[in-house]
Image (tube, rainbow, N blue to C red; front, side, top):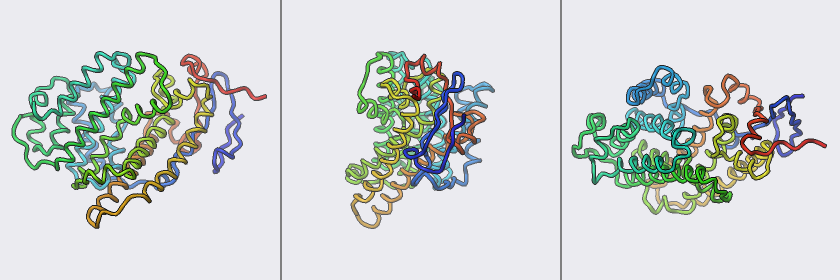
Length: 386
């Protein structure tokens, strides 16, 4: 028996969920909807900068050949090519470097040696925060950890230290500094991200049950979307006033952007993370509360459509601040959309999540997961049909 995929809403679609041996056959939500549907435009410097940025992180972090090929295959700059499609070469390179850095950094907490080690995770987070402590530049210049050096280089460039200083880590004076608000938000958003990652490790290590609201609040921080918000101001070269960014409509659009990325990410990454036994996935979260995988995917479909509607309602509530600010605000809002779109389209590029079946999954939305892995991770199995 096979899954029949029709071009209609899963809420009215008649599915045949089958159990083949030890595999559960599932149907992903329709992720490419609303403003996610149009094929994205890429930054014209994508291919050129991709090679330079990947070589940079590989040399800095001493990748062996296998690690380098795996990193190149992941193609993180492709996500940036969509989310920062209008960025000039220098800014585009900086954001690609941050993206190449953040996945390596994040993996240590997701499924690496820090996953269930809160004490060591806290040290790693503290060290990263110290990199942004401009009152004590020695923390930025003398880092021995390659990932700290990589982050320090990005921070210097965002703060508009010259390229020579950023590479050499010399404590010279800042030149051509970015606006104060951009620097302030880079520190705030990256701090909030690493605090969220640390909270995730503590939750996993403690095995404590948290509510759905607490879980989503934690994931909105640990998903790492907020640091990308400041890159919109950075590559466009403007600074939004605090009163704009603090307005409820803009806050809601930022929150929804994070949740789009969480839903997209967790929907596609669940089979891989299930096989690895990792905990921090929305499908696994609901699975531990009695929902079978397909029931969770149906729930995510409803959540996604609801957030699309909420997006346009929030956009309609955005005030008018005058011509110049409004131009910047609209670029910022479109930039938020491009972040969500970039993450989604990148998820179906390469073999990171579905191996050689990526194109098939993109066309059909049909995936399989192991029944044994579901049981091993304490997740609900599909209910038998009567």
